[in-house]
Amino acid sequence: MEENSEEIKNLIEDLNKIENLIDRIIVNGDFETLPKILDQRKKILEKMTNFSSNELIQNRIDKLLKIDEARINTIKNEMEKIKSQLKTTNIGKKAIKHGYMKIQEEFTRRKFNSNG
Image (cartoon, rainbow, N blue to C red; front, side):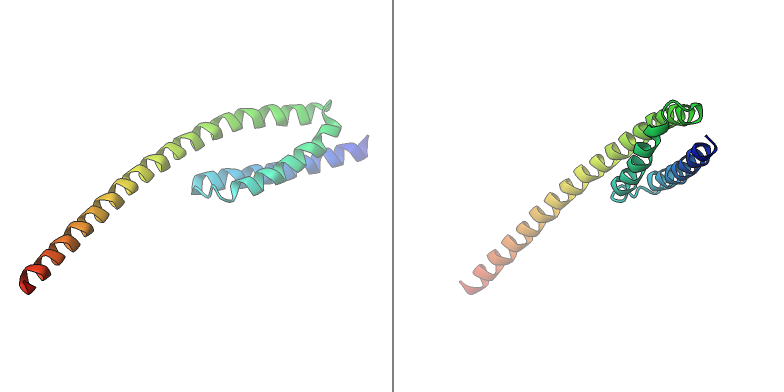
């Protein structure tokens, strides 16, 4: 039993480290790195299933689920911001392209008029 409690303690410590890293990733908006870290967390959680009847593990998982709900809301809000920025960028890109086409058209007209 003592051996199990040490392993449980180590698993919870490892999970806590990963959870802190996940929080920093979300705060920094580094969403490309997030899937890799979530895979690491998954591996730890899979190891924890061997001790699923342990109260410490159950409490930590309950806490994790509550924290994940808040994280999901934060990520949703960030994704909406990114979506909005992307729309704005695409509108600006179209405006620049159309403006460039008009300048190019005017330049061609002037060149044609001066030649002929």
